[in-house]
Length: 429
Image (cartoon, rainbow, N blue to C red; front, side, top):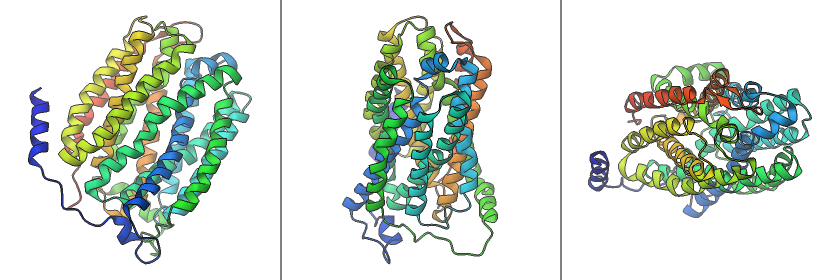
């Protein structure tokens, strides 16, 4: 309570920064439409819509775990590679893309990545065995992982610092909508038509969204670097700047902790928690509904109070919920759904605050390359978290999932460690 009082007191004392013109006005004044609030809002809407497709594509594999284990004849450890394939491919793609993202217009980069994402999603639906599914997840991750980083880069280009927290929170609402609508519908489609059906549905939804984005998004080309420096020199610079390294480390800690736990939630509840496969959509709907409330609230608190105090308040809750969830007995859906809801909401709010901290610490000239490398770090850390957890847990294919509590303890410890690093990430002067 004392901590909350301090945060609220700081909020009351702080005054909003003077309103200054949006970065889109400066960045597009010579060759793009003027940066009106309505235009910026339309850009945010198109980014969020495709982010929804990308997130459902990524998330749907995890609740489909019980079906995949049975259909493909794999165990929990091999399933962890299905999840890790996406994240590790996204990590490699982020490093490969980083030297080039500040040398091309944002619109061009975003559309190429969106088309590649949909191609990979369709390939997942066409996969007929474990190796083909792994390959398709690599393609999807290679494009989808970088797509999210470019979306955040566009938000940072379009919105000034005093509005960036709210805009980032709005973009991240795609996660909540994906949880409330996308994942439950995907689970239902998978149960009725087979696990491939959700991927075909996402591809069909995504194609018109790509067309809408091509129409709505301006080139955003003012950042383009026409220097003769070798692309690898820019990549080296993006990696070695001390402020960047601290930001990468913070994101890595958060993703390691989260993705040691998240991929096995559905398998754990079905195998150990007294939840049936038919009840799994309720779990994700509960999490998504709470996240719909907390994500924009986190963005507003960041704009009003600053990212660091909000981050310090959310991270301990996230770590505590990791411990609670991974040690649950067979409690059934009535207890499982609220626990997952609080974990999902705290994780989403935590990422809003973390990204606000990180984007404020990066010079605009590095923004594209940094976000690509950051996306790479984020996905590699996610993949490593899932892989390490997959080496610890056992069972899950028709038998109880074992050692999940150990995973929760490690995940909570890594998450708490981020509290030491966050104050060392400072805004650009």
